[in-house]
Amino acid sequence: LNSIPFSGSNSQEVSDWIEDFDDKCDQLQLGDVQRLSVAINLVTGNAKLWYDTHKHTIDDWITLKNKLTTYFKLVTGSDQFQLEQKLYNRRRQPNELAIDYCHSVLKLCSKANKLMDEETQLKHLIKGLNPAAQLHMDLQKPGTTEEFFEALIKYDKWQEEEKFQRKIMTSSDQRRNISTRTMQHSVMQREQYSTNPR
Image 1 (cartoon, rainbow, N blue to C red):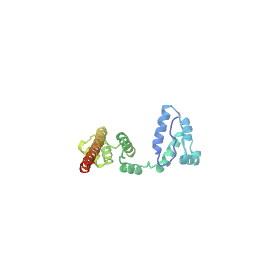
Image 2 (tube, rainbow, N blue to C red):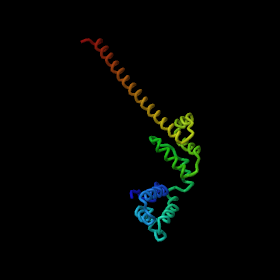
Image 3 (cartoon, rainbow, N blue to C red):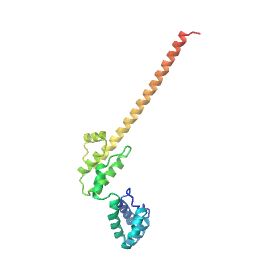
Image 4 (cartoon, one colour):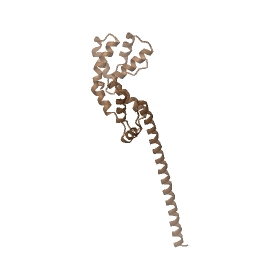
């Protein structure tokens, strides 16, 4: 089974790990006993210490899954309040791809409220953008998350084109300055030569 170990650190959400683990076990059609055996071998670090303390109360995968979830959702920040805080504070990072940003925010939306309507999801997506991108979205007025994604990709392409144009302009200005300095130097040398004939 090619599954990531679960360490119980606050950088790894227990619900994500369990979902990924269950999906892989479903693909391999593993039963409850096999899942428990594999899962025990995948817990490391704090999660392993926790398991060693509680293993006498765990005799099947469902029990392990429920107890892991109950305990580690507090540690990993996946309780309701913390999920809402993560969603509220989520901002698009410089150089973060549009697809990564959208998937991350929509996943947080789903975790915070599985029944969240698309209008609220759009508000969260837009809120995490920088002011220029927010203005672009206000002008585009996406009505769905798909339209938002398309508009964000277009905005990113436009930004890349702007950067490219600025580079060209800067490069052109630098060449012009070098050319001007070279011409000025030539003129000064000619003037110096004409005022100091040999």
